[in-house]
Image (cartoon, rainbow, N blue to C red; front, side, top):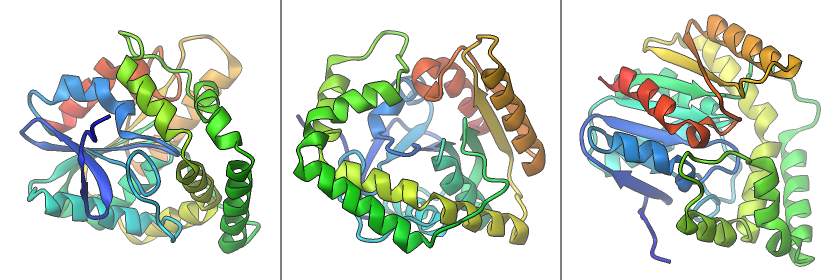
Length: 278
């Protein structure tokens, strides 16, 4: 299969359209094709930039665990490589919300607005074990599973269990082929476990940044809700609303949608992006 993008600033980047810049940053284990249907709706009027973090999508892996500042600087490096100087709308899904918020706080002059899409809530960070221990354990587990062949055997199946979202027109054959290829890669599993192991340190980093730097640009928290009246569903919306209040952000609900709301409801997500980009 042909590579859909190019390597910029050391990572795989896919660029579509022209106009006000929009950067899409996925969650834990997210790949560029998770945003395909959102891009279809935006690329007629926006320059849409999708960035695969190290080890995800078609990006090479990194020897270092991620940091919020490091990912914020990566977004700047990619925009610079594209010659894009206009302020961008940045959208972070799930764990990607930490990186997008860090970008908006550290580089407000490069930010038109930020959307935290069903983002990881990081109001009470805590860390019991040193990050280096967690990361080392994650690497050992990933490499052991790959040596046993379980990553190649079960990778796409695990993805189907963890991500049950379906775009309105169904999953395309091309996306199925990319899933079958990428989710079997040992580097993908190791990068996912390392990023997950880094979460407590990332949460502490963004909390410290909030205490030191105000948010001078518009920010929107968007919660995904399936539409079913379950206690957990409404509790999640309540927690996301509280998260928005603590950040001084506006708040919306995307529904009916699972956690990967950009796949289930690309039209609603694209509309939120257009609001900030216009």
